[in-house]
Image (cartoon, rainbow, N blue to C red; front, side, top):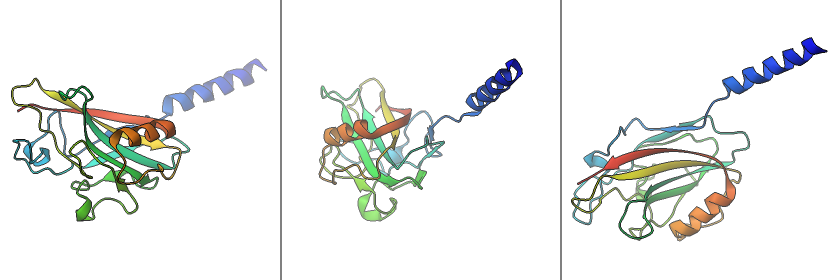
Length: 180
């Protein structure tokens, strides 16, 4: 019996050691945003193109994904939502560069892009106030237990965020900085 117990323990520890972590990465981003991803408003003159993002090792039970970009250092008292895209099918593991432009047709079929703090749907790049300290933009992918979030493209980031947190199984983030 002791040998059997040790065998089961060894197998269990091996499975835990080999478990893969849900991760998010980008071939477009390093530690700082470059001009092609910066907003073209509020005094910034960037390309306002959403970066390529990819994720791997989603947990079991994932039915869909969502991605957000948020600036907690924005001088608003509540941060600034730069992008929210949801109802991404579970079979999709990448958003191609430029997917944040709803009229470009690059985002996966069936996805919905919510209203950002720019007041429109789709991606809005970083543009912090001049001479502020660098802002850390939190990019997060959510693995969700539902196929649909239950809100449409008129949903505020706060409402969509509430629904995300009601349906999240796991999330992975990266932080990219920008200062002007």
